[in-house]
Length: 373
View (spheres, one colour):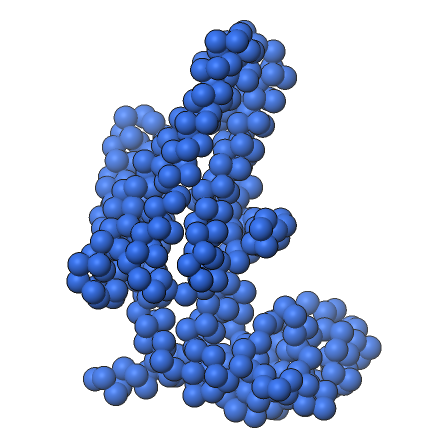
């Protein structure tokens, strides 16, 4: 997913995926044109607009609070939880590794629905109190909507289908009973696929009942849940297979590097056309500065290849991220997933000693499969 950084809360990066704008506009339009005018007629059009904007923004603030609760509890358990992404299907708090015990997962997964139930109670109290004190329907109506949406969010997340919170609670229970995290993940992911299928079926039924928008959303959400359940189980298997493999074992040692000074034209002629790779680490006296790739060069006007240097075009080291040889390959997978990169530099004592690519990961997994087979 592409997107941009919105900011930080408690040191946790908040990102907005570009797909988020689709759901933002849809919810704003639905509240402004449909829900609020139907429930609270005879108000000025400008009031419906402000109600829709407030309801939409506070809904996403509630969603963010739900995900923040996951991240903060995960941090309290010693798990890296440094990023939350809002996208078309909601939000996702990203943790850098698997849980160490069923109890940890129970706490981290359970806090999300608890937070949503608490927010639902808060907005219900605001609605009831506002009605009793004669507040404007513009205020009490938004509060009632936020009460309902947080209640629905809490209940929906309790369904026992991975990767929903309820699915993670289910996985924690199976893990506690069997002592086998992989088996628990497989069972919980199976529940997620079944739940996703049920959503798709109900979505199709809604289409036949002439509920076009609701039916399509149920189908899309069901498809997303099924896809994510499969991907989560595959990611678990991948992480487990590489858990005991160090970066130093899997990396490509002493990769071919380039200087930051040559022009792009010279780099293309001497490396891209002559070599076998699409990306090269850029170093100066053994110190890594970044990576120059074919994709970066494509962004440069061909007429300027003679005047632009590798240093100007390369992806700087701050954007790439680095690892050390002693780190686990499972940590590299996390960086690949979170940063959306295909290569990570391996640095020791400030000097480049290797590079890890997705091809290196695939090669090592193939070795594991061959040894086990």
